[in-house]
Image (cartoon, rainbow, N blue to C red):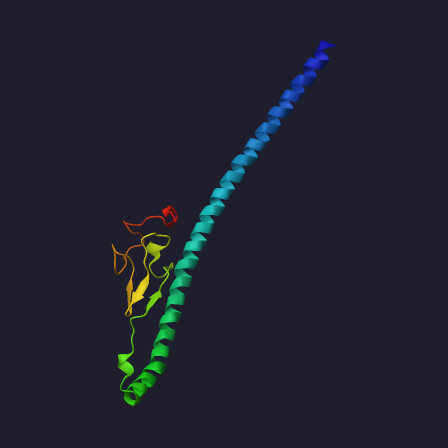
Length: 147
């Protein structure tokens, strides 16, 4: 009678061990698959971002050229008709938010100012014209600010 219960518990222990081994293998395979998917996703995002952003920039530049060709004659005509045209006060202040295309190093930085004064953008006190690289040595998280 003792052999039966001993055999039963050995079979159960083996079954539990096999199930643990199976789930461990599945977990390892799943982790490997997720790593591959994450790498593919990063590569895909990078390619889309590089290709799409370049194409969008090209379209905006082309549109800007067409827009300038259309507007400049109108502005010149208005200048001729209104002698006070150039005296318009352009000292009003507007805000420019950083984007992945323009001032990307400033995204989320607490030092970013982004105000336009007289047609000139003041990015921040440390880098008035912004930085040319993708990162800024003076970048500080915006979430650290206490209001």
